[in-house]
Amino acid sequence: MGASTPRFVAFPFSGSLQTTVGSAGLPMSTACTLDAMYVSGGIITPGGSGDNTITLTLYKNGVAQTMLVSLAALQASPGGTVISASDLVHTVSVSVGDLLSVQISQTNGGGPNLSANVSFHAH
Image 1 (cartoon, rainbow, N blue to C red):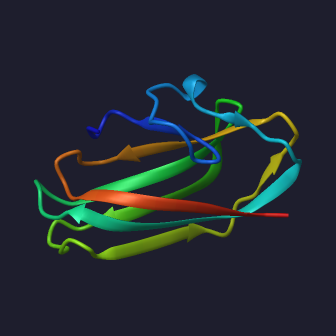
Image 2: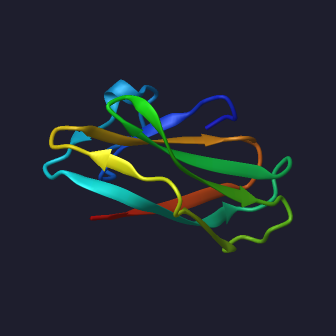
Image 3: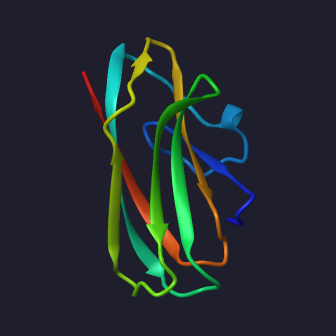
């Protein structure tokens, strides 16, 4: 995935990465408020051509929400390094039938590659 090629994945996370938000998203079966987003990642392939920042943004019904998390992977970080971040500030109200997905983008496709685990707190 290059720096200018954001991808989308359905929430809950299933299926493959999609190039458009309209191709990703599963209808929610329960109304709730998401009040936290947690992301942890691990560096799979260290090195590359510089630092890399992965940003995960929550989308609701095809529209970006204010809830997002960024993970910074430094070029010098060894493989297996675990990094994590969270958004504990923003909330998103969800209604039955809303389509949720997460956009994944990065600043340097030639930088360290990451795997990421995403979770939300809802009430």
